[in-house]
Length: 421
RNA sequence: UUCAUUAGGUGAACCUC
Image 1: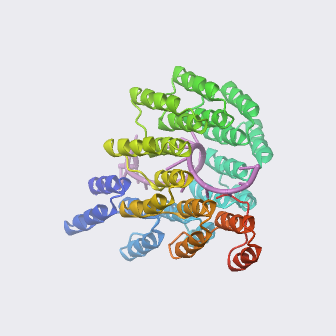
Image 2 (image 1 turned 60 degrees about the vertical axis):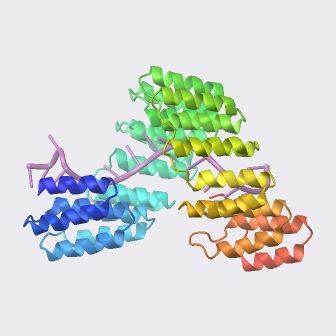
Image 3 (image 1 turned 180 degrees about the vertical axis):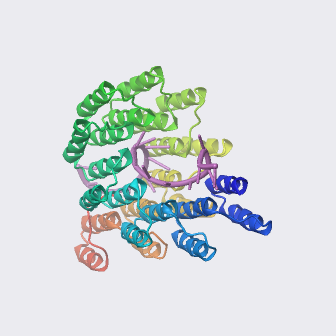
């Protein structure tokens, strides 16, 4: 049983669920009865790939086969609901497991707390934290990490630092993840000084920064245009025994591209290869975007070719960057063709791709075409026009003095917004 | 049997800025 379970787990981790299920039937056929761990591996894997419904069915089957779920099974399901942004379903399962006599553990609570935080419901998360304390379950670093990260995402940096302070005072030393979470938020807010101070503080507490900590700092420096210091920090981490990874390099490649330092970005690309770190689709997409925005479309195409050679498939971001470049160069029809090309390559345009194309059409005064594309995108799953779409169309209509049509458009679409995401 | 299963942090593309 253990052997089969290990094999099934291996297939699951490679997202080869079909083969994992085949193995399950095979072991049954050989009279080898799957046990709780075998099922848990499968339940977890189904949840991770967004198939929580199938996971639920499997649990029903487990019960039927006399193998009732345990706390790990429930935690996997709860995690599935949280990842699917359904924290209320997760809470429902929490109640259910209690009625079945299964004690929730620190993993259960931490998972739900994280799920609530990811939905921006930090207040409820804090209430659940109190609830777990009352239930005699002590929070650990994961629990606090989820809360701190949730507060950071809501830009409640003050409160996040207070939780951090309280942990330090209560003798529960925050770990590298929690420090990094706050350092990241400080960097995003442009507060590099405070971030550096916190970095010193964690070092003072004998917590060594890891690659994620450094990457957050490096990104903060890049976003402020302090590329030289970013490169210095890359050296510094290496010297401290923390090898830069593909993310570290990609951050700086992106920073260089945003500052139009394409040649330096190229040099860094070579350097990372030399360090045994191969560029990935994000690294290449940054480069393609940088080249596209500068109108160097031939070179951008060469990068696409280079990606093919190295077996790195372009994704929707890569293609959208190209579309942007084509639009900017006034090559609108080629940009439109690119929407087809990417679809044929198995990469469906998303909301951003459409918005990019719509903006290009508007800027070229082809507003009617833009509007018909807005209608067309509504048919595509996950591509419902958003606030950005509206801003693009409204601005185009208003700046060409067509305020009547703008009003009409506003009536027929979601309220315009200045929000991102 | 369970060191066979579950939870937190970092990078790229669209409008305005």
